[in-house]
Length: 204
Image (cartoon, rainbow, N blue to C red; front, side):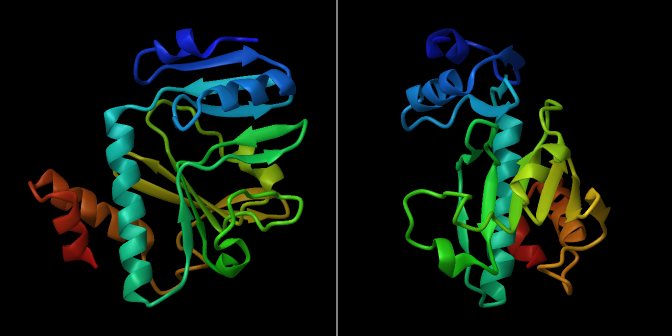
């Protein structure tokens, strides 16, 4: 069993891959308690972990707050969560930066735990990638309909198809809203000196 203490001492932005059994991955994940770091990703006998950076945290908050603002403007119901661990027992585990249940929000609302054997996956998973940690293909086995990948000022939307993920210009859940463009407008306003909340208000 690998101890959590040396992992906690890794510098921000670190990414490491370690051979590990499913049982040890489960113990390591549990040993974090209420902490959400390091972020863990497990697949087929290997654990990959990352220590998020300050930049990661800022981008995560901005894209999530932007999406919440759009949903509230549209008077839509939703469930959002961060962090959350999605698992397929004995196979894989992944921890998106943010998850949104949109069409299936009522199915998971109020639950304390998500079980993908009986519960629907999130409609949208958001990943902030500043350290080349994210591989969109990792989400295929979890059957997440859309993964939004943020790298700097670019938000790319990947839609699950029968052949894996394909990049799309728009989201199926927001067909009349140019999400990537709105995100770039927020980033541009922040660069010009606006606070993230003010930038989001100006865009939405």
